[in-house]
Length: 167
Image (tube, rainbow, N blue to C red; front, side, top):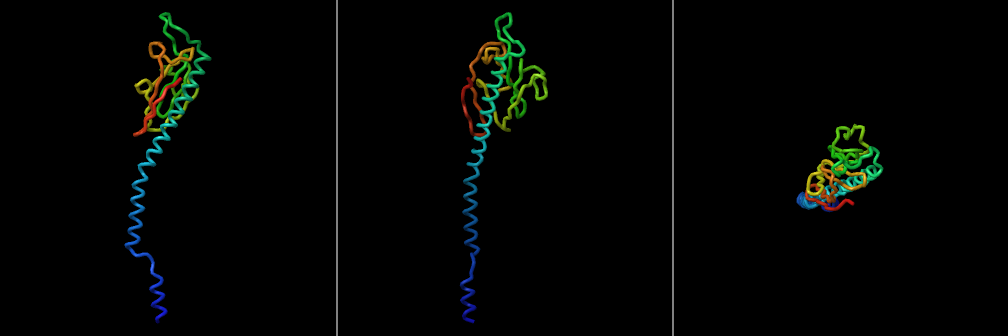
C-alpha cells in the first residue's frame, strides 16, 4: 500500500495553473511577433514592386531605343513615345508606341511583356500615381506633352515606403 501512495505522489503531471501560465506566455509572444511578420511581408512586397518597376523600365527603355514603330519628333519639336509602361491591375505592361493606346492592354497587340506588382502596393512617379510612363526614341522619359522629365519614385504598402530614382 505504501508503494502505491509513493507511486501516486511521484506520477503527478502538470497542474492546471502551470498549464495556464505556459499558455498565457505563448499567447503574449504571439501578440508580439504578429506585427513584425506583417511588416516583413509588406517590405517584401514593396521590394518586389521596386524590382518589377526597374526591370519594366529597363525593358521599355531598350524597346524605345530599338524604336520598332519609328517614333520621332512632332512638327512642334515634342517627342513621340516609342515605348512605355502602363499599369493594369496587378501588372506593369510594357508596350511599343504610346502606352495610352487601346492596343496596350494585357491582350493587346502592342504589349511586349508584363511584370507582376503585389496586391496593395502603390507606385508613385514624380509624386503622382503611376498610370502610364512614356519613353522616347532616345531612351528619355517624357511627359504627355513630349517633354523630357526626370523620374523619381516612391513605392508604398502599409507603413513601408521606399523612395528612389530611375535612370
